[in-house]
Image 1: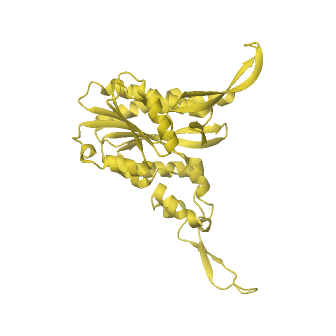
Image 2: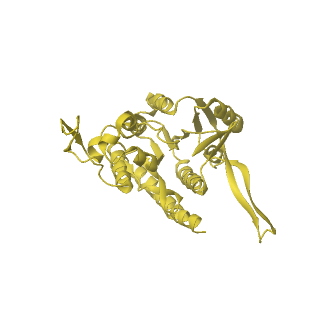
Image 3: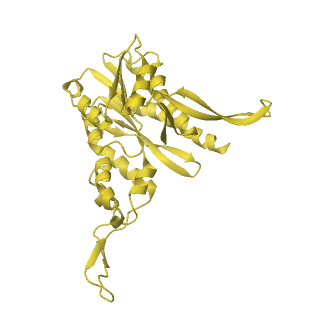
Length: 313
């Protein structure tokens, strides 16, 4: 969860560090493989925050011969981690809507000599659709290639935005899909959706209602007056649990992207999966898919066990 503390960005827990480690690991693999190619390499952090984040850490105990206490410290977020990678990306785009966060982001980033950096202020979906609809990003012969990191707070990434990113045929997209939040919005009965439907349309695309609910509908009586069954109201039950929703969303991504990895599950405690970290590859070239799949396999191998270790201590 992202919380504002002045102009500082406080969010997450132990799983956040592992998530950031996993993305950084992939970016390093990507740069090692792509730097010698003729492409102009871009990194886009779509929910950049301040560039840093506040982290709580427990110190002390017998080994340190001091009282156990919890301290709060400021550490590097995904933005500053990406800027430190060598060899570097040729171009960075960091997007942040909050004015205070954006000002802190500009101050944290500065202007590295080795790369061009843009800190854009605006609503992420609008900025991404504007930037990646440009001719320079459209078409498989474009001279640009890049990685996009979508790390939203709750239900912020729109399906139309994913379609635009997929249309470039040039981007690897890491999407931290808010699985638990989506599951909460998808009521057990379709009648329980109510005013949440437009938001779900925006995030999942309109197919969710027919894909995730059991149609044709059953019929249930609606009592309009005492002892009067009146008309009937149609209703449908949701199909499947959270794991079903996760699998369904992967198939949705596969409709627009050339390849989608198995998700890396992120747990906020040992029994609660909150997120699914997907890698969606827009480039249909077999070599691009093979390379990205190889690197995402490294990520799963190295970081999925870390979650179990983190919560077993």
